[in-house]
Amino acid sequence: MLQEALREIQRGCAEIIDIERIEKLLKAYFDEGKTFTLKAGFDPTAPDLHLGHTVLLQKMATFQKYGARVQFLIGDFTAAIGDPSGKSVTRKILSKEDIEKNIKSYTTQAFKILDESKTDIVYNSSWLNSLGTVGMIELASTLTVARMLERDDFSKRYAGNTPIAVSEFLYPLLQGYDSVHLKSDIEVGGTDQKFNLLMGRQLQKVYDLKKQQAVLMMPILEGLDGVQKMSKSLNNYIGVTDEANDMYGKILSISDELMWRFYELLSTRTLDEIEALKAGVVDGSLHPKSVKEDLALEITTRYHTPELAKAAKEEFQKVHAQSQIPTEIEEFSTDGEIWIAKALVDCNLESSTSQARRDIKQGAVKINQEKISDIELQLIKGEYILQVGKRKFAKLKVN
RNA sequence: GGUGGGAUAGUCAAGUGGCCAACGACGGCAGACUGUAAAUCUGCUCCCUAUGGGUUCAGAGGUUCGACUCCUCUUCCCACCA
Picture 1 (cartoon, chains in turn green, yellow):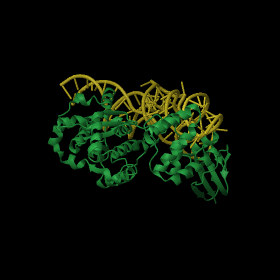
Picture 2: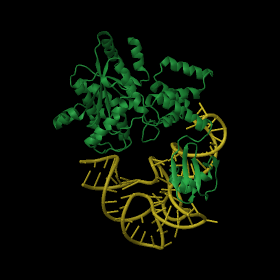
Picture 3: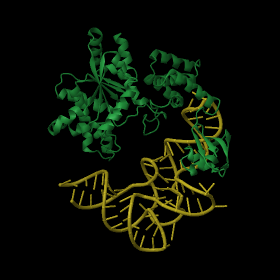
Picture 4: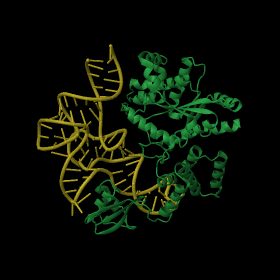
């Protein structure tokens, strides 16, 4: 039982620091029913969860099965500083209402995965606000600049002449201090958080807490391109609120290689089952596409319903395997004759008439399934199905 | 505070008076091949009913027939010195 729990906890992890501690905590739970605390921090600026975030949430849910009480930390104080990203340093300070709104949408999404009854939502402003200048300086004195510069992105930026604001140094310290205040037993986060996570351990020692949190890091999930991390700004993400059709389609568009990664980090199938699937693909008894379809179905079901997921699968086959028109297409209408390029822009299929012309020249545009090549074409009265590329459709009614 | 260097399209980055809507790379889009996969190959990648026109190279002025390129000021960034 303990071994099984450990194995599941370690699944997909990038790195674990102080696994012995985790083992002890689990043992205490199994033997005496003693619970422990698991901290994870979230930034209230990004209310839209995508599958990259759920990797961590799923891990937290696993811990909850084995006795963890989750400290769902809202970094409302630290959000004002902004975690050093190397990009824009200054961030808007969010209003209380905005933060509340973000948290609300964040947690409703998160509780699709987490067990709400074993989760405490805490705000770090509630203790960091009262830290005061003296407390802050005291905190800052626990670390040297040299140590701070050990952090990978700081050293890179320093070496690369990219500016680093002094306030950015405070972020890891404050995040670490959160662990002191919460007396966390374990903290989980992404590998990019390593420095900050370790800071918690360090500060718990400095502040004489008699214990140091174990740290468990999950890898950063790659986005649809399979290379860069999944993120909204790179537009390579699958949002948990994506519509079933989109979600299904996006998952099916990932590469075979990435599919295994998604299986490991997102599927609830056991590692043995996944191994069996892999073996099946290798020996040819399973088609990689059907394995991918199963994954798409599983994940779509999780965030929607089995019925919707199934419908998404059927729709996908209809549109792509049989190249038919999707069931639901956005409809537009216009009065009087319209130039094709203009029509494509009006239907949001193209960003400019220049772009539309180029695509028509390249044979990317179809009207009622027929490829067109005339960039001067005028659409007269009637109904048209406009298509650009393989996936952009619109219905246009010309009156 | 002083001195020097820099800011070019989504990103990186060439261009140092006309040949510049601006080399190249990446990204993105599209086509071929497929399993809407990957890999590969090809084309496109500021806007505009367009063999032409318009607006761009941090911002504002100026010199010039002509400026991304030269001058002045402003803003921001970097390095070195203090």
